[in-house]
Image 1: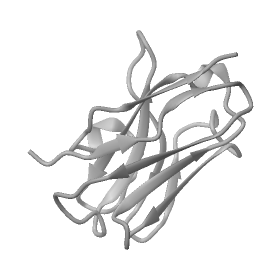
Image 2: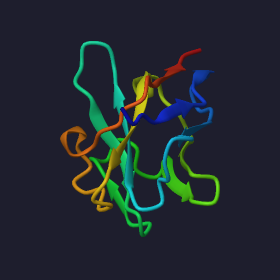
Image 3: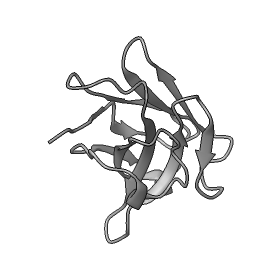
Length: 125
């Protein structure tokens, strides 16, 4: 089963930054849409940011607007989530998913697959 690999999580103080990476050595991501999602304890998985194969970005709500950015480096077969000005409410397990249609919209978990194990992000002082 195809699976993505998330990395880069950790413990950070409020206001800090982290960069998450989503990659795989099993297949090329170049034609896929990729989305970042998160799941906090007791809550459903929700979209964060998604990027199409052509680089169009879809957001989910306003909670990360102006703080998080998504980008892709096809040469490295990697999609990044840059998270700045982190808040305690950003604490969650972050996952990336693959949309083989390439569109990455809507940025909702049901439209993505190939989930990895996730990476924990904890924002706390």
